[in-house]
Amino acid sequence: MVAKKDKMNFWLRLKKPFFVLAPLADVTDEAFRLIITKYGKPDVLWTEFTSADGLCDKEGREHLKINLMFSKKERPIVAQLFSANPEKMRQASKYVASLGFDGIDINMGCPDRKIEKSGAGAALIKNPTLARQIIEAAKDGIKLSGKNIPVSVKTRLGYGNDILDSWLPELLREEVAAVTIHARTRKEMSDVPADWNRVQGAVSIRNEMKSNALIIGNGDVRDLFEAQKRIEETGADGVMLGRAIFGNPWLFLKSQKAVSVSTKLNTMVEHAKLFEKLFKGLKNFAIMKKHFKAYASGFDGAKELRIKLMETSGADEVAKITKQFLKGLK
Image (tube, rainbow, N blue to C red):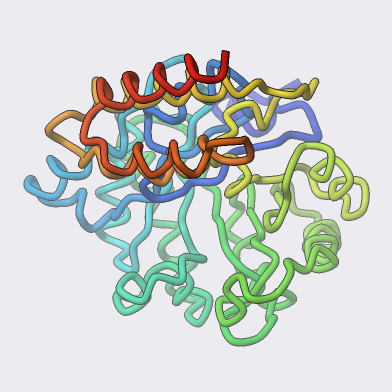
């Protein structure tokens, strides 16, 4: 039974193992999340990562609030924030919690140089004292909002070197609800395979500390079959999948089956129309082009179709080109 004080902690109600969608900038916006939710919903969804500092002023909040759009269909959904300023993380967490999210996740792994320059993202791995202050500030902000939602962290094995044995305990001492371990260092980026043995190491550290935090592994997982294998190998509570979602909103379906070309392309059109409906005048339609590359691949004529899709500037054009292409397949 879940204790009264933990009733708002959705992590405690998840059936293990669980499989979640990674926060991907300019990818996992509400349009794509709604498509994914319709065709193969993961156990937990994340927003795109969002600047806590930006949310603390009127102009920045107005610009960033599109990152925090979500619907009830997407629950449980976690808002991911980044900052190296405890006071701004406190203010932003108060605001985000008031929006009704199920949790707040703090990004301590992003390798973007601009974000690192501010001391946030992966740079926090080098400053565990500040990292802990950021977590405490997020919790304070949530309390100030009158809500009681959990805080989690997404991070890496280390910055230049693997320091998981000293870094993870710092996070666990703050009693976070979950820690997602991207099984590489910041220096390694994606140049080397993810080291899932270290996810197993994270589980051991958690167990030795008698922490209640859930451990989620992340890195190079292509599908649910591989995710399940990683769970069995490491003892992790869950797996986060990211890049494998491109062009494949069916990724999280428990029973996998081949998706026809027509189904794939009609879903692409649906996605484009939903993007335009939600974000017209707010986001550049060109963001959809990375999705077109993923949807239009792996079949005869895909290259020619992609070339045409890259020249579109609206959903109606996408629909027209796709309809003509599918007619030619019959």
